[in-house]
Amino acid sequence: MKKLIIRSAVYFTVLFVLSIILKRFVATPVILISGAVVLALFNTMLRPLLNLLVLPINVLTLGIGVIFVNILTLLITDGIFDKISISGFWIYTLIAISIMISDGFIRHKRIEEKLS
Image 1 (tube, rainbow, N blue to C red):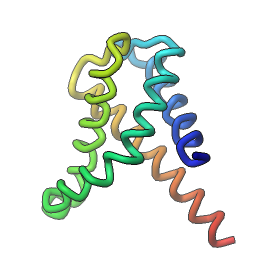
Image 2 (tube, one colour; image 1 turned 90 degrees about the vertical axis):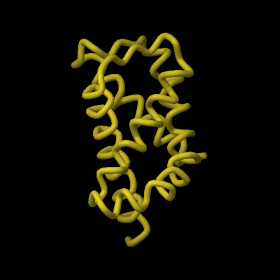
Image 3 (tube, one colour; image 1 turned 120 degrees about the vertical axis):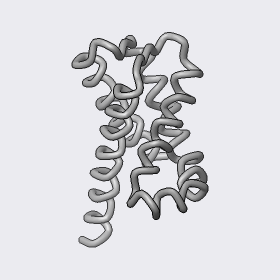
């Protein structure tokens, strides 16, 4: 549960900052909180299965397939929330890469805590 809350908070921060910076990504903070929680749920439960399915593509493309898995989870979250407006493939890609980087920081921090 703690992992889901931390991941939701990080996703909200990433989505909120990107919604301020990007003009083609519009959502209210309340909707972003809900979207971040749903995205965290999808990334916790659905993304490992999707990563397993895309494993051959990841091997061939040296990991670029992971970006498309993140874009898919964003598309599903965007489909659930009508009030989130993301327009354009490159906006989805930028958000997916930002979320991927934030996930890396979360995993790195947890590994550091376990080692110390």
